[in-house]
Image (cartoon, rainbow, N blue to C red; front, side, top):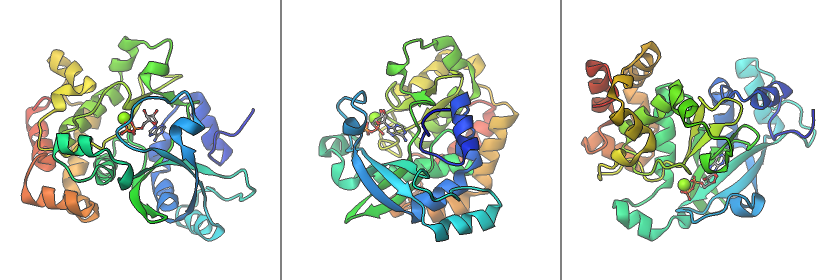
Length: 296
Ligand SMILES: Nc1ncnc2c1ncn2[C@@H]1O[C@H](COP(=O)(O)OP(=O)(O)O)[C@@H](O)[C@H]1O
Ligand SMILES: [Mg+2]
C-alpha cells in the first residue's frame, strides 16, 4: 500500500486515500489533544519541505512533525476508546503547520488594521468546531520555542491540493457539493477577506469536497466577504444559497454554544465578539436562520 501519509492508524490512512476528508471531523478531539499537548519538531518552511508550494505568502508557514508521547496517546485511547496514535514505533507521526506571529507581514496587518493573524486562525477553527462544519483542519494556539503562533493539522497532498495544482480541476463539481456552501457560510460568519484559490484545498478523488485554510485575514472590520470566491458564487446564484437541514443544524449548533465559543476564543477575538464589533458572528448566524439563506 506504499508509504504512510503521516497519520495512523491505517484506517485513517485508507480514508485519506479514498479521498474522504471526513476524518478531520471524526477525529477532531484527538487531533486537538495532540496539537495542544504533544512535542513538535520543526521540519522546515513549507516551501523547503514541498518545493512545489511556492509563492509569496502573508505568513511564514513552518512544517512540524509531532510525535505524541505515550502518556497522551494512552489518555486519548481511554477517553474515546479509539485506537489512535497507539503504536509508537517511529512510523507514527502527525504533521502540522505552524504560523508564528513573528512571521506575519506588517503590511498585511496594517492593510486590514489588525494586530495579529494567528489568533484568527484559531478563532476561525472554533467557529468551524462549534458549527460542526468539518471543513477547517483542527487549529490551536501554541508557543513553540519562544514564538506564539497557530498550529494546524496538515492535510497531505495525497488527499487535497490548492486548485492551482489540480490539473483536472472541474469547476462544476467544485461548486456543487455542500462544502462549497459551508465555506461561503463560514466566510460570511467570520468576515473572511482572503478566500482565494490558494486558500482552499480541493479533494483529489472527490472535487465536490474542499478544505478551508488560511483564515489570518478574518474577523476584520473591513467588509470584504464579497472577495471570497465561494461567497461570490452564491451571490451570483442566490437560488442555490438556501439553507438545507444540515446547514440549519450547523447554525443552531453554533448559536447553542455561544458561551463556549467566547470562552475558548483567543483574548483579542473574544474582546471583539463581546464588544459587538464586526463580524457579529452570532447575529449573522441568527439572520441566516431567519432568512433561510446564507446571503444576509
Ligand atoms: N493545513 C494545511 N494543510 C496543507 N497545506 C497547507 C496547510 N496550511 C497551509 N498549507 C499550504 O501552505 C500554503 C500557505 O499557507 P497559508 O495558510 O495560505 O499561508 P499565507 O497566510 O502565508 O498565505 C497554502 O497555500 C498551502 O499550499
Ligand atoms: Mg494563503
